[in-house]
Amino acid sequence: MTNVTLRVSLLAGLMALAGCAAHGTLPESPQGADVAQREREAHLAYAHGDMQRAADLYEALVRDTPDDADAWFHLGNARFRLQRQDDAVLAYDRAIQISPGDARALYNLGVVRLKQAQAAMLDSAQAGKPGDPLRGDGLRIAQRLAKVGDDLGSHGKADGGAPPFIVEAANDASAP
Image 1 (cartoon, helix red, strand yellow):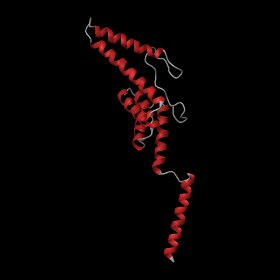
Image 2 (cartoon, rainbow, N blue to C red; image 1 turned 90 degrees about the vertical axis):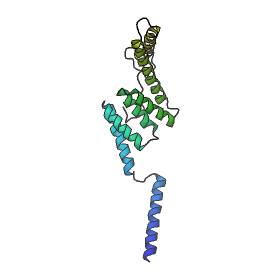
Image 3 (tube, rainbow, N blue to C red; image 1 turned 60 degrees about the vertical axis):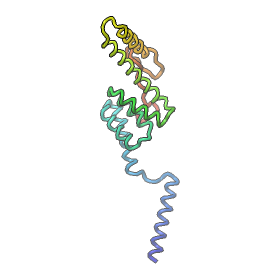
Image 4 (cartoon, rainbow, N blue to C red; image 1 turned 30 degrees about the vertical axis):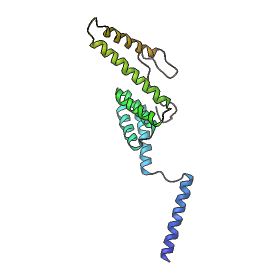
């Protein structure tokens, strides 16, 4: 009889868990709770301007949830604010791979690439010798790229002629 009682108890427990799973009432896994907590901490660090901590937390978050486009987007923003433009490009690229239609990630990737192009043109102008046509061309192109920031849409902010700023996650109540 003990064997039968054990089987009935086990079957009843499995049925209860199956019912909970069907209704979405299973308790959150410890890993899921950790991920949610890390995400809250990352958003809070970002909102308070602690970009290094935010980046570290977002990096841990994307290690735990590598297919979360939003986490990659936020990581790109933190890296951008840390002046780590190449790393920001990698994060935005990953967000776009996961979610190809993510307008925010595509826009921010464009902003970073504009800033990279402007810096490259300035470097070219500085490296050129006086009288070298590339010196003048590099400076003119850098100035034109700087003017891109003067013609912004409703989400951009001007900063005296620099290319536009990245967009933030305005629809995410927990994000900055």
